[in-house]
Image 1 (cartoon, helix red, strand yellow):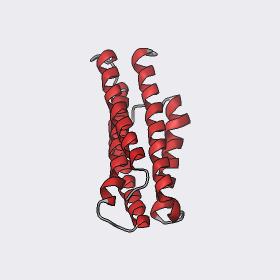
Image 2 (tube, rainbow, N blue to C red):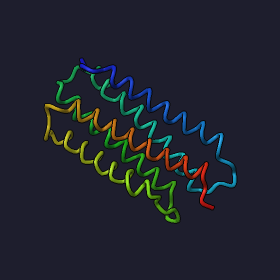
Image 3 (spheres, rainbow, N blue to C red):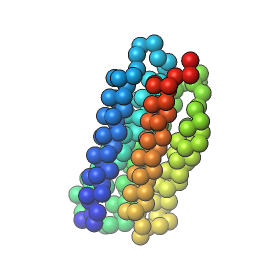
Image 4 (tube, rainbow, N blue to C red):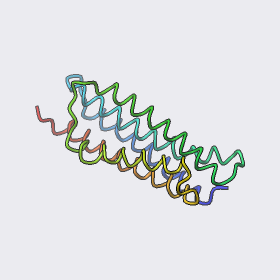
Length: 163
């Protein structure tokens, strides 16, 4: 049984709220004449919120199989890494080659993505096998921070356009 299951439920709720708030901001500020980059960033924020929500539920689902404690976190990290890669592939496909990265992307989103990937790989490889739970929670918090950075960049593009 997971020790801090309420933390995962809370992170899942925050992920859903992030995705929903991005949709609300989009409904208020995005019009049909906005650029493709704004819509791509909106989808990125929503995908990030969904990754957080689903990612927080993965360990809970795996725990239901009564596996050894260490194995729960290694499997969860593998599933989360695959979900993260899928989100990256979808995001790259949406952005396209014509979109340039913003300062927020260069300063926060990309370094956080590198940190997230390395963190999951350490759990999968069992480098810190006794700390799997806290590393997965750290992953989820980094995904949350990444989503907030993406949302701020989206908010900036929607409500303070440079055009």
